[in-house]
Amino acid sequence: MTCQHCRHHRPTSGECELLIEGRLSELLENRNPCRPVDFVHRVAHRRRRADGSVSGQASDVAQELLRQVCEWEWSSRSLPRDGRSFFRYLRRALVNGESTWRRRWERRARSRCGACRHFQGHRVGRRSGCGLATIRAESGWRPNPHYGPGKISAHQDPRKLDPGCRAFEGRRRPVSLEQRRAARWEPVAAASKDPGEQAALAEEVAGLRSLMEELARQDLRCAKIVIQVCCEGVGHRETAHRLGICTKTVARDFQRGIEWLREALDPKRSFTSDAR
Amino acid sequence: MENRAPKSVDELFHAFRVSGAARQLATRYSSSPCLDANELEGLGSGTLSEPRARDVRWHLIYCDACFDRAVRAGHVARPESERP
Image 1 (cartoon, rainbow over the protein chains, first blue to last red):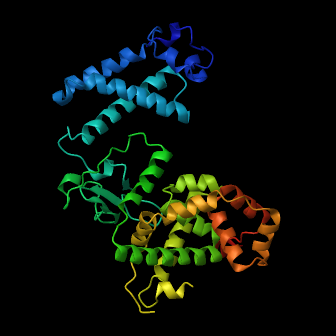
Image 2 (cartoon, each protein chain N blue to C red):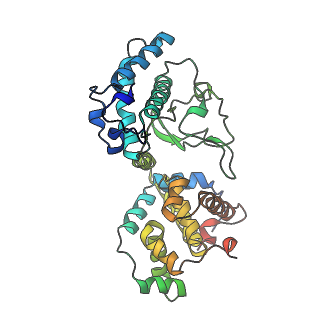
Image 3 (tube, rainbow over the protein chains, first blue to last red):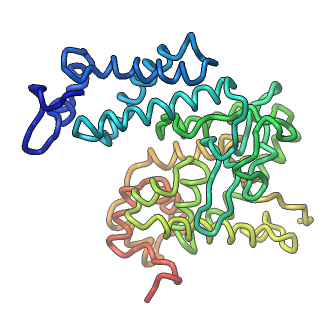
């Protein structure tokens, strides 16, 4: 890595022209002194020597991760602009991505729930816990018994849960907003074919819709936040960006909306008749 | 109507998504035509009929552009907790 002798190096700012102008293909062609592909193979080789469990596939995995990291990060424009920071960043992304890949395919002896992308850490007014509402079973989709705040800790081994969790996915895996939304919509296929269950489901949905209309009448923004977070799968940060408000305000409004719905669902009241 | 044991909010939203009602509402109201100034003003002043006001509110839930316009024009009330 000799940026000083490279023709793409800008001596005044220390930045790389290829990184600034987004010429990723030229950067990966290996004609430049920095040779990022060789760098990737060097990192993979060191990792292979350190841990022989993935000896045959470390280079392939590293190469694939390099492609994913560059495609993903390039679109979000969060890559560093100078060569030294770029390679430091690349090394960290490769090592983290490889660990995630090995955990995902259970090549590593122990994984923990805190490293899973479904795990929600401490947020405003909430405890940590698993955020995956539904899981795929042999018979179709079913509610996740470990879903909710305070049920599992970050140090929990997902395979030792009762029942064991097979939905572990490393947090560093690049997942776009569209993929998250698609995952939210996917349980539509789990709707029951039984007419009695369908009628009960329709009644519950009508009750919730009435409650949402009542909430929208009282506080429209709160209802909008609850729908976006609970139905569309949009995160607090993205919701705040859309509405032009602070993330803490979103969290507070979401909490207030959920509390309002819980109060409306109080056993002393019949929510289907009271909401109308 | 008899009192039945209500489900939790999470279970209700799960049913809301599973039944497809969430997607139907999103499809219906996000693709409906955007609101004009008269409708927004009618929502703020309460002169719209209740069915129309309900449709307008659902559209505002799913359409970020109209919601932004309504907030800027002051037709969507701020929550009481944030009022000075």
